[in-house]
Image (tube, rainbow over all chains, first blue to last red):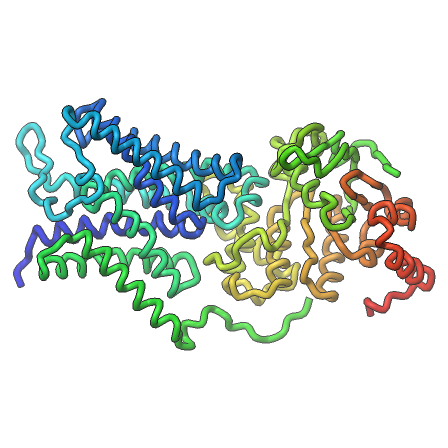
Length: 298
Length: 262
């Protein structure tokens, strides 16, 4: 088989997106906020539309800022509904993101004559078109696919964010009260995480779409968590799964001539199913880290 | 029966805390001396946990204020340590015992800095103090309730604070461990630290604490153990329900014999 640069680019980009989403998803899962990721990925729609309208371009900074702000707004709204209005978490998520998403749809329709944006394009991205959308500088230099650059940049942001705030993320995920007593701002860390989730969602929606990006946030971490109970292996397994679903997803989609993003998520779902089945008959060597069995004295 | 002290470590002034317009603590006004082991006693729903949460600023009081080391709370956070109730966190979290104890050092590290060798050694030392050295590498999901509690105490020790607030640290801890941890707390208070413990068992409270706070929505008593531990105060705190218990307590006290402790 000869080297297919288009296939490589698509798989490479898919992996970058899947790993970025997976890493963030691990922390969302540990905070029991996986569905907040879902909410954010939909709630950013009005921000995208407004950003698009203001700048006239789908690729501008305004779009990312708009989406980021809406992501934070959604987080704050969910939190406010839950704490102040005493609405249950699932209900407050449901209310918030459907409302914001609906506003986004209305905005798209209102501004449809001015902007080249429709629901389809936001809901279902298409990673297969990536090689034909090149980033060409003014001097005419072809730097390769734009979406790959976006995904790469996003990947660096996510890794940098997690590296810098690693201990804060862990502490506030595990025990929010304890971190508040110490003076580590749990709310600030939470909002920072939510902004980067918003940013990731926006930079991924052109390639995988707003719906499937949720699967990439939730499924790989949940699958990895079935196999390990410590954090570093959890992150590594999530990354490995991100790469394997890109590879398998691409070739399966190529084989049956269908959507690559759809196939990636289907593969993720199948891997999750297999993990659940295998895990329910877990062999001894997966038992965990218990080795000390002798009694202890105080 | 409320004893106020000069130069208090902790001063609570006219504190009222409400949830949804319902006050759960009324006009609590007390001060605590440095270097004492303080027990907070009271029936279920008396507001014991609420009191220490209000001290740490986890709950905003309706009125009144709290001063720690004669300063507002935010100036002295690094000197305060907290042992939350065990049930307040999810123990399925993917972390080892050592990871959790190291969390105690994060406050002093500050933003962006990672724990290093020094923090690890401190954490191991704290684990040793609570008798959990052999468990450092174990995942926290594989601990028993009492062990979880001891991990939390070790994490608080790793903070190297001057004021410790512990919310029922002995729930689910066996007798010998409880005694050992009490001895550890007594050593800490002997070196000038102040430890405040929400506690349930009146018998061990009498043995180990220097200072007692009795709470039942209102502050019933706050003072040295010898002054406040009497039937009248206990009855005021626990109501008539405690008749039997106080009688047992008196009996044990007179005979200086405790069948529950060897």
